[in-house]
Length: 460
Image 1 (cartoon, rainbow, N blue to C red):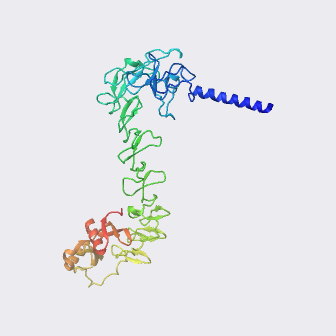
Image 2 (image 1 turned 120 degrees about the vertical axis):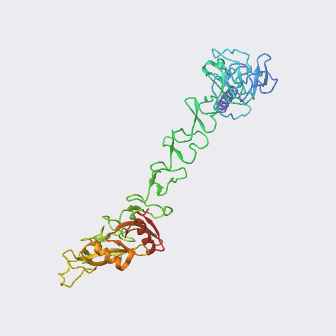
Image 3 (image 1 turned 90 degrees about the vertical axis):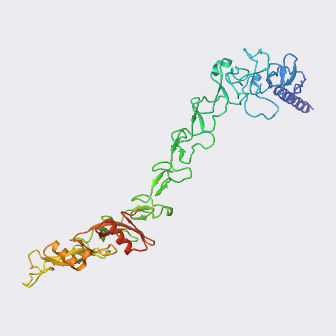
């Protein structure tokens, strides 16, 4: 029996404590102060003055609860308003309860110097809604002056001197570059961001990122790593574009999200969309290996040497001249009348002394300077070849050649010109053609490679 009595007393104490806590929190009220016309609630543990609930305020003149918040109406003074002397923010579980004592465009005329006694009319007074008018002064919730949208034009306004309270002036805010930023939590207009109290243009290179919409705009800029500045993107060494690409051909977005050139010697191979993977040489292990040109290693795919040089011991060497390797890849294996012997271009030995009856090509007597001399001829396709004449001087050899070939004779010397020949199956190959000028070399290359595209200079 004693145990039953003890348990009963304990339950009673717990129930009373729960009842007291609920009453203090406003869950259980002895007074009904949540309907218009009902008497105001007395002070309690949450609000130390007469007050009301459910979106109502206490009219301290009539001691009745009334609709609150509008100009001329009582201040809303429930448990979560400034009358609680606590700074509640956020969303309440009960949507009928209020945090703000007055609606936008008004302030609550109430203050408590000592936290116990309340001064003022406890009504909401219109303010802060006229451009050039006074700011709303400090009230039960706000310590600084503030403004709202203009009542006539709906232009956003802010207080030019919040510390002066109602002594400040409401000015337009947040609309354009250089205009003062709004203080009411309203952001600057789209394309602007607050910086040092003013609205500044945002979103482009050299400007701060925007705080709403696209942070950096135009598709050619991105935010830096610290997200403090928009920087140019898409160029060499710049961050990649927002879509992950780069602005120029022969350029890729690397693992560090930076744009880098591709296809050059030692660089990453270009993807198929950029054409040939390498401008010079070939792709090995996703890196361009420089090869195929004079004094470079020979390539392992396609033409081993691609500029008319000859592979010698794994390296492309110049060919066709005295003491150089023979040019097996060209129609002319050696230049200047030399012959290929044991893979090397050699000048032929001087001829034996002629008989007294021997004559040059023009019928002149043989002299000590009489030797076979090459004369270059140009065909209708601009390709050149040479013919050899026994002559004592270059001029005599040319004269003999003109007698046989006429205007096809172009002299005893020609130059070699670089030509890029791009064929469907082999890609771009660098070659040199002997000719009188660059145009002639390109014409000859085109006539001998009719299915290929010919351009002067090096491969792209």
